[in-house]
Length: 377
Image (cartoon, rainbow, N blue to C red; front, side, top):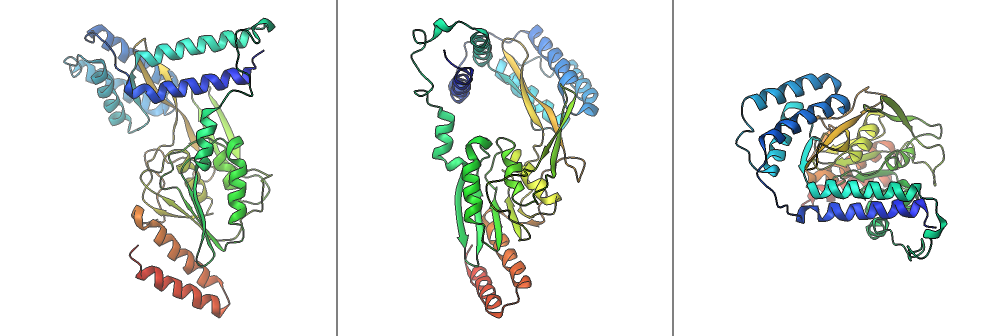
């Protein structure tokens, strides 16, 4: 019999294909009816009221939507896509929350419904006769293309090297699921274990899957677990805590200078890592203010045509008692993206110069600084 794990794998991959092909889809549609506009706005208000994580903003957002609708702004909009785009712009402007997004996509909505229904039927099915004849594909034959692609990308670890001066450099572009990335993460930290300082480059990191961030962060904390962050889920009304790991696959990287490079493109979970490391005073942040996308989202259907991407979870850092939503992670040292590595490299050498007692090392660090300063980048 096909296992539940295999069923869910197939669902995840198939849904991913739908999402990838989504921009290529076109829809045959009639003009957007006036009554549907009103229905969509009413539904959005109800969903915001019961799900939006920033409770203090709900009344303002919903009142503003009523005012905009009453002003006749949407009256002249005849296309579904234009209505979704305008609603998105208005929600973001009102809330200052970049996670809001209204989508017109009847094909995706229908596909989601059919898949969820089918997966539920398969999971509830307890008939051993479905083995073999209805499914020719075994677990061994099934290819998890998500994993395959992640593996080809080295699970997000784009570059790992030791810079002159014994300074480690790690460029991480995505946080893959911990079950996938743990071995690569451990190997990476093993490679830089004997360096005297470390630079972690998140300038192109768009987020990913927790708790990969707290696992990597655990290398910079003592063995006793530390609360990494908390999150409040509005629909569930629950707060959950994430801790650093007591057991990791290598030696901890303690009492050494750490620098994290960020940019305007640094997003979501990458911001969480930089934010936590900054406020635990484990790292110096170098670069630009990050995107400011702290909230976790849900994709909720409105009707057969429209769905909304809605922020439902907010983070609460144990030090700041808040998160980086709308503000971003503010760097200790500002630098353009193409200059951030140079700035961090020089700062690391400065730290090593101060900390060493050996004249030969001081001379080496000073020489490196001159070479870096004289280089074009």
